[in-house]
Length: 300
Image (cartoon, rainbow, N blue to C red; front, side, top):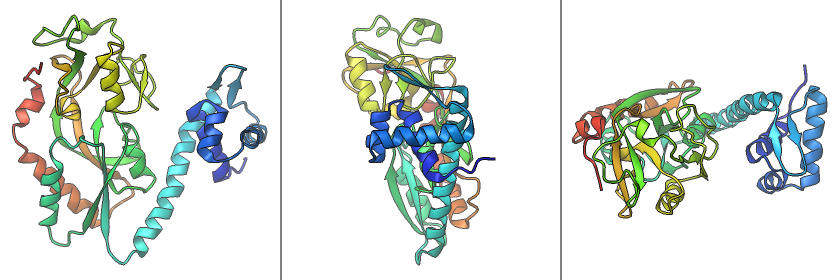
């Protein structure tokens, strides 16, 4: 069995995610020829082709897809081990919570206040992650907890508790053919272009990972919608406040979304359990939860 080094996996994952040797080399701060040779050596040692290369594009083979999936988890595990050791040796116990900017469903202040009232509560550092990488922050130890949305975020390796359930809204430019409707159904959106979040594969329902332009954050998505290049279907709370150039319409039969507080399955610290309990308690007193359950208030 081949022994893989962490650096080899890191190099391969960078190329597999970028699908471009130049961008991957820049990301890793190494020379492109050195990166190419490192990947070739890895393929030779494993005895399989990981990447299909042509003059125009790089793509993953089935073997490459398998190594990317498990390689990410391996890198996360190594990073989490190092972070756990640092935390264990820290003189002051504290927690790190990662959220998406504006993606707390108006719960964060209440959660922090509820936690601060609990016996033995420590300091909570709030970190900001991107649209699709917050779960990785927890898996690799950069954060202890995260506020995530299902089914959009990957909860592999994480435990979680639901905070609230809400419907989804279609986000449309004001001149869109459906902008005057009070409520939509998924069938109404047939043939529409939906964006694909960076790092998220296209999904069968066309909602979680569409086939349209790749986006990295809500700001990019908003700009493309205003230009008429795409529409989007997202949890209502994740796109508040309402942008004046857009309309948001409830999609009655879209699968519901859940906001959850998530943490590593391996993290059994009482400090984490206390924060989770505080988050669940705070969510129960959240104002107007029924509005978010049904997304009944059409905006626009």
